[in-house]
Length: 88
Image (cartoon, rainbow, N blue to C red; front, side):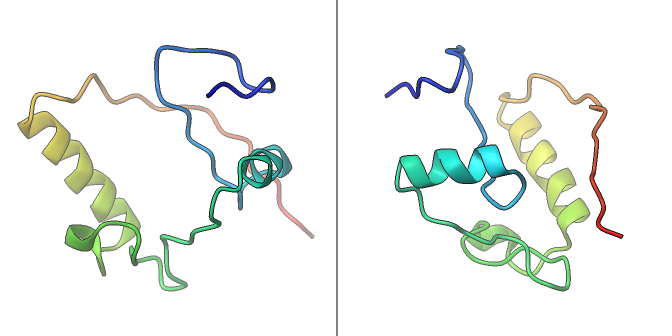
């Protein structure tokens, strides 16, 4: 189902309700559960994937990339510029 606030695309859309007001509004509009997959210590926790549970987030990222590559599903890896607002 297409949300009027999201441009149609051929790929997947990642919604991270804890990262932006827009994502939170989208999650609430579609009754999506608010999940936390990274624990306070920076490791993955359920529902982040049983095989990654307890793995530090940056190590988990490398494992996911390797798993996708092994299955022939990796389309590429690239850096993206980000703006991270900080409270002072």
